[in-house]
Image 1 (tube, rainbow, N blue to C red):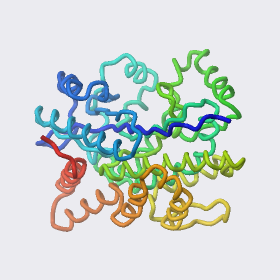
Image 2 (cartoon, helix red, strand yellow; image 1 turned 120 degrees about the vertical axis):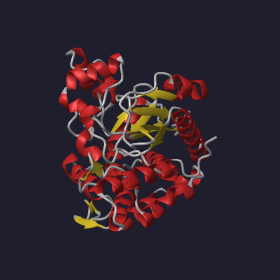
Image 3 (tube, helix red, strand yellow; image 1 turned 180 degrees about the vertical axis):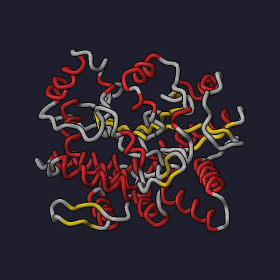
Image 4 (spheres, rainbow, N blue to C red; image 1 turned 30 degrees about the vertical axis):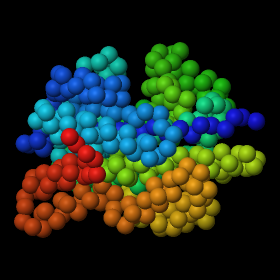
Length: 380
């Protein structure tokens, strides 16, 4: 019998750096900013593809409470350093009005290769995301759980949406980030693999042929991490509010443990074709939680609130085990007050209704995002 996974948790987030006067994204990062952050948080801060972005990652955490505290510490550090350079930071998967054609990518070999390889497609990557790592040390188990966990990915995306605007326009989507990301190769839902060896064999074809340098260029919505012994969930938008991010991380972690419990009882989650899961993925991207998702067993669209209650019931034992009942049940609050996407759209409309111009309303959205990004975080 495979040793029980550690189910450790780690959260990676990507933030935007904006000019405090214009509220637009900066074009070039201050040359010392990354080093100043690293002086405080070490290797937990990294550059991202664009100079207007910065990425952070928590330590390996054993509890959700520990993960939350680390995310708060990281957000606080980046915000303080940014403020020293006349900048602010915000957590959302798209900036409400920035234009992609004016951005500069980070001067790093990896990003230069991506820019040369992807050309105009890479230039449009004005998007940020959140990745959640859960410790699954056994490689065959990681592949097995990956194939089963695909089902729940749209349900997690629903709770995270934070990218309704693109270049100043309401896209009509709650997660326009996913629409942009879909244009990149080796993204979306993963293939189904019979074993870890099967997975390696397929990826090695791409490596040997020179199409990609290594497995880090496989950017599926969920994947076995190359750097860590984890199963990495990548479908979600970056959450503006820290509590929402922790909630989604808790749900994902508990879902994986629930699947592991089924395995111990010689059971498994039913496998559905990617064509069906992609339909829910699209519904999550387009509507968020407003129009529901498909229950494949019943063959009907079910209100998301009902699906959430089913999910919470399935992972009840696991939430108790991880002492994160409060964190997973926070999902009900997300439905009650809306995701970042809902609050952005409401802020925009309320400001317009008060007589502001289109541009002024977009600035109000940025201000709301900056404020909510640091809500409940001590910035000294």
